[in-house]
Image (cartoon, rainbow, N blue to C red; front, side, top):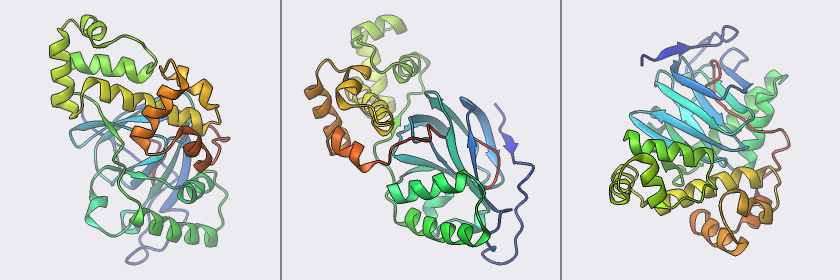
Length: 280
């Protein structure tokens, strides 16, 4: 499918220097609620955040899932597609490429960990009605935070094989589905051995480990929304709270309760984000 160039009509980047001066024309925030965005490109860099859930992303020949504490970075001109794994909206920042952080990593699509301060800046900028001075200050601070932010290593790769991908997509939609690998293999029309081999070769993880990470990522969105731990555990497929806590800590490195305390309540809902252009 050919990539479509998308650019918001209200945003026409204007270069006034090197780097360009930050203005409402070349550094803007938006909110978007479309559930999916087919392959397209932007004339601007994009930072996309979905604080209420996870994003399925395709870019650079790869597919992966971005958890709620990660933000998707897509440089200008890079074809990509995005799907929200849940209902709600995304927060997007778009910016002229001359305003991006320094370094080679910003020349490719990637996921960065978004700390609460960076998240607060993205929320504020995507709400609109920002004064010129505040826009400049917010951009400067956000660039510093992004430059220091580690690349998110907890992303979940999505298999390319149609059979394994069909299983992956259903689990992404409903991580609580209790079927074991044998049940999923029967659903996909392959042997359990074949399905396990496909997941291992195309995601670098065993089927069980891949599913655990999907469940934990779904839990992160629910926890960010303020749902109690005892309610989140069964919602993402765990029979016991203790089993959920153990799995969550194994992936995230902290307990669900500690993670929830570290995140600002997602009272504004869920979001998809970027830097100058249209949503997606």
